Amino acid sequence: MDVTQSIADKMRAAGQSEAAIAAFLQAVRRVQAGDDGYWREDEIMPVGELPRYEDLPPSATPVEAWERLAIIKLNGGLGSTMGMQGPKSLLPVKGDDCFLDFIARQVLHCRQGRSSPRFYLMNSFNTRAESLAYLRRYPALQQGQDRLDFLQHQVPKLLESSLAPVQWPEDPRLEWCPPGHGDLYAALQGSSLLQHLLQQGVELLFVSNADNLGAVADARILSWLWRSDYSFVMEVTARTPVDAKGGHLARRRDNGRLLLREASQCAAEDRAWFEDTERHRFFNTNNLWIRLPALARLLEQHHGALPLPLIKNRKNVDPQRPDSPQVLQLESAMGAAIELFDSAAALVVPRTRFAPVKTTDDLLAVRSDAYAVTTDFRLVLEEARNGLPPQIKLDAWYYRWVEDFNRAFVEGVPSLRECQSLEVMGPCLFSSGVLCKGRVKFENASSTPKRVPPAVYCDTTVRL
Image (cartoon, rainbow, N blue to C red; front, side, top):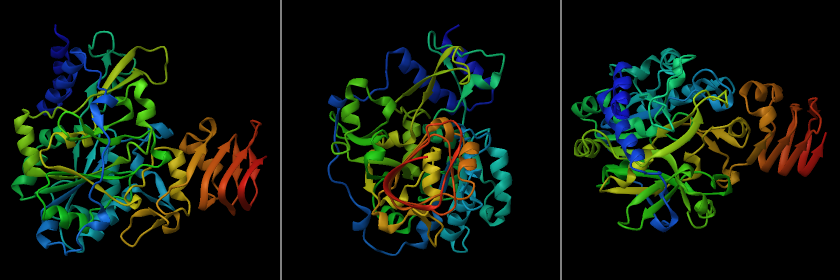
């Protein structure tokens, strides 16, 4: 049997939509044809000047624009990179408040008593039950809606040698993986939410990650987009040294269209160019604005499966067992759709609209006083930091998992308002009242945890 047929059969048996099957088979056929998913440096050009948030006209946002807007938060992650077992969005980020607390308050503040804009989570099978249960404490969120979420698809892990779906009887759940947030488009179509929103007169979509609490449906951007002809707008911001390994914006040399290049889409020989933040100046915040009628036409044009660039991840079928079979996880990024829309643009936004939490390094930053909560419930860098987050490096051996991280900072996180960089090597227990300024490093060469006493530490290396 052809491997594509076995893949389709496996996905149908698991209840995956035809839109998801078509999108995944398209990716598999491209791998079979030798597509490595790379954007090589000689195929792209750096991006020059772009429209900036500060230059947008300060016009009032029509009520109709709010009524025709829907907000989607991508909520499929388990936080497994930080050792979590449940939805990452339930991780406390400020006091007892988790991501979903902030998101719910942001949406309700945006509505100002209206039932619009509509709000949805794109959940995974792993996050759905717990996330929806948690949001019951915010009953007003579902006002005027028949549901609060739709499901991200799951796709088979493929044997790298044959591209056949892997079999792993020891734990069949490990035979599956998420297809990346590029699945947004197939999931909207496959769940019928796209058709429902269009029938309800919704024209615009604002999409962002659940772990980015700086991203809200901004009135100024909405007003600008409402009066424009753009069908797709990506929010980007200036790259700093901490962003050198993240995806960046570029243009195709052959047709000048904007594109997104992720780290996994960069060939080894182009790595220095990729990490050059002076050459490739902007990165994708994953805050996207999409005009739904244009998306529907594009999906129809491509028979329900957008041809997004490949992201190929090589892993073991059981991540905890290096001796388990090598598999390919085929993914795509939703921002990569920028090159498919005829009227696409990128907008340079302030760093305040980008405050993601991917690692415990990020978690320490947002829990510290380097970030503040605004009146509209965003989590943003303190103004005095001039848009530059503190560079944090925690010893992964001791702080990678949230449980270990919490134990180290149980008395409180250090003040980082005036900290340029913080590095912690070896096991440390931080006292309340630790204040870091400039560049600070704590070192414990032993395996026995040692306490960091309360004090002001400025441009220093402390050996405990």
